[in-house]
Amino acid sequence: MDTSMVIHSGGCHCKRVRWKVQAPTNLVAWDCNCSSCSMRRNTHFIVPSERFEILGDSKEFLTTYTFGTHTAQHTFCKVCGITSFYIPRSNPDGVAVTLRCIDPGTVTHVEIKAFDGENWENSYTTSGIASCSKVLPVELN
Image (tube, rainbow, N blue to C red):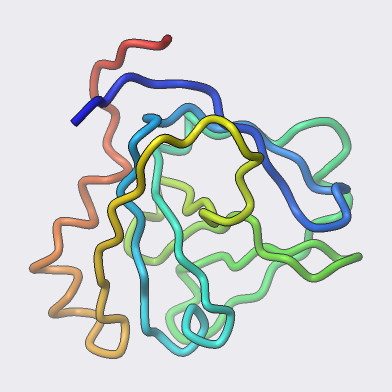
């Protein structure tokens, strides 16, 4: 599978929140069944935080929701309510980017993996999700 990196752009529905992320053209995304992700039908991929950048004045339109352990920082747009990215509990050193919030044209393939958020500890231990936010050498196209 091609793992070459590109810059993906994206954001929320009203376009007040915009960002860019360095990630492969072929993505591994996580479909989580935790109470928050399942209600939002959120499928996301995870990158190291240094590969994610919030653009312009987007921060002024963001707000954050936490629950449970308060480790996950669920950010969403104050205007349209869309969660285009957030800091996941599984990867507090990374960013979870909502797959459907990427602008068209840079993704060539998506592999969807299940994350059993209802049984979080076991899924975290067995899924390998923690490695998604670790920085590895990359080649940018």
